[in-house]
Image (cartoon, rainbow, N blue to C red; front, side, top):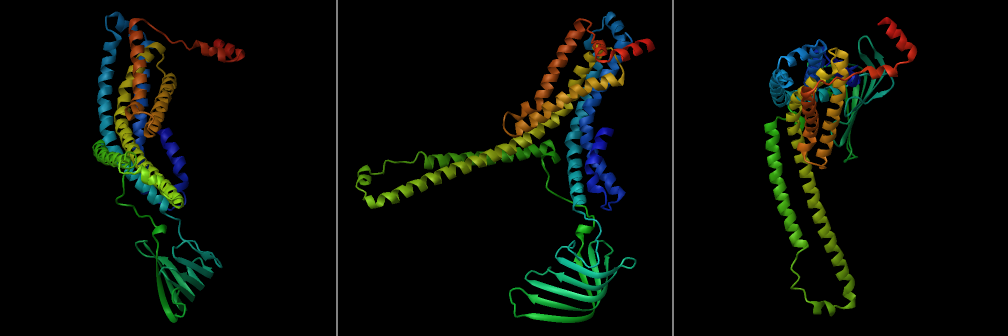
Length: 434
């Protein structure tokens, strides 16, 4: 969790620094993103814990004693398998009920933070375009009091009109709810012109004038609702969407069949061959143009229907992949028990370093298959089931083979060959110290 959290903070640091975001908002963002971290961490933690537990028992010869008393490795694995099934069910509930809402809130919060700009910065003698629809120029700025002098403002907020406001002095500040930027001006003029009616011009002279500008981009406002992607929906919602998409797909298939029958299998019995032979040479070009246009119309209609079908199939595969993922990742807890128990017995090492190294290898293999299968399944190379379950099937078969082999005979994995990789002078020092 610490590694994933550090990676997340490094990735989002540039989006958070200098925004003036409250600490509570940052804590919420981290809390929402912890959900997907838990989903990744739990299966790996199960594998590490299993390797350490059975490795300690094997290192202390407890496995040998238990097997000599007539208890097989299968019975020894049964309690952990039962616990892994319970853990897989809890992970399924978490993936289906908690993770979608957390992903949705994290997406909305991240979007709201990315929209927020730092506080308004004005420099003397330069136009500021940070406020939408306004260009603000102040020739002198008193930083302590925010008092501006010799101000020029171009107002583009009204379509079709350009207002130029000038004032000798003024103050700029935010409203209490931080949603508006207010500017109080003294002793100035407003020049109004219409882009459409160029002969119309109006000049207003004022002693006091207030301009209210939208300041949403300078303040943080959380979005209440928003559209949800496939990773922000439960299995029930995605199945409902898949059913709707399949109904649309059936409609598109019917339309495609009608197009094919209309253009490719049209009735040609009514065409008179003798009439075509008697066509004047002057009309041959017209017939040729009509034939080419007919072919183009046919190809456009067929290609358009094929693209619609491909798009709907891609959407169905995308949601189907996510549905299978919500089942396959919790099932990995059971698969890693089948791998971790026999490997722990074979390694005969219960330390965290050995367990973490072995589990990292299998976890990389698992996620390589999972991520690769997800991308290939979404692109239609094979069925979403195989894309999401191929890693579980492969590692599950390996785990069953290792359990069968370890139960039949005592197999020990020796890491002494790694000593050959150590330089000879270092190896001698280690042997003396041992």
